[in-house]
Image (cartoon, rainbow, N blue to C red; front, side):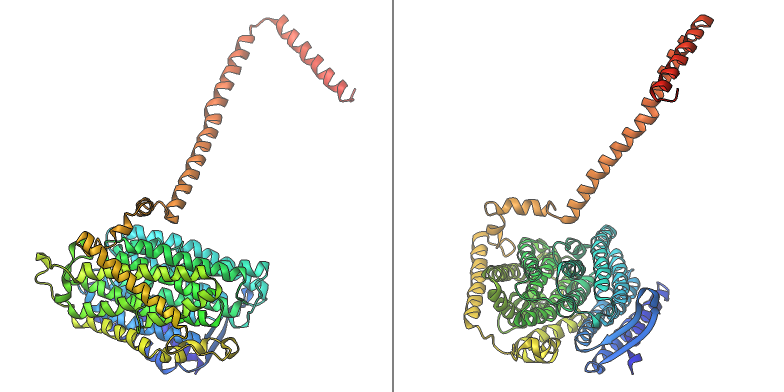
Amino acid sequence: MDNVLLLFLIVPLIAGILALLIPKKVRGPVEVIVLSATGLNLLLAAVFFKSNLAYFCPWVPAIGLDFSLRFYHFSAFIILATAAFGFLIALYSTVSLSDKTYAKHFFAYFLITIGLVNGAVLSDNLLLLLFFWEGMLVTLFLMIAVGNKSAFKTAAKALIIVGITDLCLMVGIVLTGHLAGTRTISGINLPLDALGGLAFVFLMIGAISKAGSMPFHSWIPDAALDAPLPFMAFLPGALEKLVGIYLLSRISLDLFQLHPGSWVSTMLMIVGAVTIILAVMMALVQKDYKRLLSYHAISQVGYMVLGIGTAIPIGIIGGLFHMINNAMYKSCLFLTGGAVEKQAGTTDLEKLGGLGLKMPITFACFIVAAVSISGVPPFNGFFSKELIYDSALERNLIFYLVAVIGSFFTAASFLKLGHAAFLGKLRDEHRNVKEAPPLMLVPMIIIALGCIVFGIYNKLPIHALIQPILSPERLEGHQFAGWPANTALVVITIIVLAGAFLNHRFGVKKKGSGLKAVDHIHYAPVLHIIYDKAEKRFFDPYNIGLKIINIISEIAWRCDRAIDWVYDTLVVKVTYACTNQIRKAHTGNYATYLVWSLVGFLLIAVFLLQSGKM
């Protein structure tokens, strides 16, 4: 029975290899393979969801690397979620990529990524986890690189940023294994002392980088423009959030003893708060549909990190609930963006408008996903955010205020996006735009309905999926489903959302355009200077790193040139000068030579006398 776990690896990996082997011009079989493999993967995840399975096989015992897999509630939940998103996005992609020459390669890397994600989630050995984790880095690069002409540069950027953080993960795994005396994940529970805290930080860097948190985020907005259309819904929108937050949760709940008020807990909350506010402020001023969504994909990670970082049950439940909610509405939003690009030919908001009448189903799905991410009741994002608000307020008022301000700007930016793309005047070049094909609409509709169900009937995901992740002792008998217990926070949330709506109305009335509805914020005193620098990538850690490397390279080059000058120029000139002087001294006069010899003899004698050897 336990051998069935291997199917979660074998099915998508073999299917991905088969897709690569099919000739480029043959299209039909590739779509059949990707739908069959993702469908079977989903079926396996659903059938064995409530099972507890384990598979063990010694692999390289000398270094403690065992092929050890563990299928229990938490990993089963993540596997089921990734399988569902994988199947729906595969269904969507068969149409959205129908005219792309790179479709075969994208589907192959798509399937291999699912297999690697399954392997990373199921791994019960730190080194085995690292093996699958690094495999995801390769497919990340390949999936971006098959996009447009500038995609390779973006893929290289993603490879470097994520690769560096994966090195940190590697250090954390080695240190954790050393401290615990074992590399079996289920057998580790370390205190957060000096070395334990250091190991936690290294592991945390790898986890939040995969999830897309700041400061390891800057490749994501670039990939939104350069990577294949479904990529953003698949990885940054869904799977990377699931696997990254899964690992962060495992190291916070299982591998280490994270307590409220500890420096590690506070550090996580700070990372979450900074990610929320900075990313949403950048999303607010974007003028491209997908690029705006990409910054929200970053910002929403902040809520998850903040919730888990509180280290209290309501925050952890809220962070994990927000993880699955975000994967739902964020992938749905990216799919609506892909539908707009497919039908209208662009995601530039300055070239869009009035598409709501032409694409009513896409618009309806956008509305559901947009109000969900904005935290409007009674949609799913509202309930997970309220749990996080409550936990943040319990820890510190500052964190709560940052989270609420983030919600204000989230709502403001989606009012701007929806108005610019779907409302207003329809452009002449879009008169003949039609609704997206059914196979593109079905995944959007299913996910949008999920946002509604997970909100109105949040007892289903919280009781069946989220709360069982925590032990009964940690839950302390509390229940978190239903309407939020803190009515005051709900009232504040509604006031904040109303404020965002009034802000939008003010901006539209002032500028006469939905796209320019937040220009009064964008070009506010001081803010416009910061925005100007940010849009020029002045604060991009990747660009800062490149500048530092260039400075170091310049210094090293100049040092190299200086050393070459010493040996190739200075030494040669000195040698020639000495040689010329010696040549001039050789006059052929024997008396002169005799004097030199005597002087030399006297110098040797003096040296020997002083050294005591005579």
